[in-house]
Amino acid sequence: MEYTKEKRFPDLSALKINPHARTASERRRRVMLVWMSIVLVAIIAVIVLAFTSKRVTVEVAIARPARESSGTAVLNASGYVTPRRRATIAAEITSRVKEMRVEEGMRVEEGQVLALLDDAEAEARLDAAKADLKVALASIRELEINLADAERTLRRTEKLKSEEVASTQDLDRAHAAVDALRARLVLAHKQVDAAQTRLVVAERDLENCTVRAPFAGIAVSKDAQVGEMVSPISAGGGFTRTGIATIVDMDSLEIEVDVNESYIAKVSIGQRVDAVLDAYPEWHIPCKVRTVIPTADRQKATVKVRIAFDSLDPRIVPDMGVKVSFLSGEDASYATSAQSVIPKGAVQEREGTQVVFLVKEGRIQRHAVQLGPIRGADVEIVQGVSPGDEVVVRDLHILRDGQRVKVE
Image: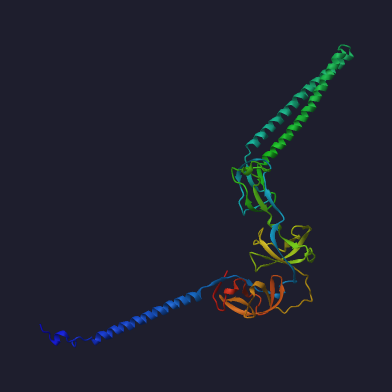
């Protein structure tokens, strides 16, 4: 068979691309690229906005006037808030708890009932003591009647003896009867006294079933529950409680610190003290030394010092950690050019400059400052911070100028 050239090489001149279709395809491609660019820009904008608008929580302190303190710190120490009057209330008898009338945090007054104990046995002993007293009193009345009759018999016998009608033996028997009844009457009176004493003891045992607060204060712990046995002494292992509740006199709170014996000469009774609670680092509490315990701890080489608050505040609670600065006496010749006083932790060195971070309208403002003398846990600011400014005191390394923050 013979093939022609046309059959071996087909004519492709009829195959052409429609110019209108090619233009529509390019237009769709360009529209898709534009929309993809818009979406990408929007995603980047959302991410940037999320990072820039995220607020960091910061802790601040209020800058104080430089003249607020009446002296410079000569010694620093740390300790705890402790009450002078703190008591774990215990029952005076061994019994079972019938009712608890105290809860943690409750304020109690002196004499207020804290708990009621099972008093069934105490009431039975009281009833028995009352019955014994009645029996003793009744025996006295009987003896008094018998004694009166014996004395009349003695008088008649004496008269008959004077008339030589009765014998000497009859007179002796009459005397003996009177003496015996008088002795029994004395014994009966003693028995009445003993019965009255037992009655008082029984009444006290019944009263001891009611546990009362010895002084006004706050119940900081509830140490027993209804149904448990309580006792003034430890008995029965872990099945017997020795306390009902712990009461703290909140008006007796003070600070207790240990001062190294090498520096105790810098402390004197009545000396001014600046205290800062760990829970409120920006709150400076004025105090003064109440007493220096006249003994040293040979293991720690320290002397215990007790410090009294000038005024108490509900935020001060027992066992809080506290840092104190013992201040020198006020010196009229002392002058300072400082504008304010802030905690030392609010100052950071960046690029060779001392800076602080202020919070203004929810944003961080970085300020260069000029430092003055150090006052214990604080530092004087000669320039850069005014009294009343809010300065950040923690996590300064994560802050930058203009950053949005939220005050803790």
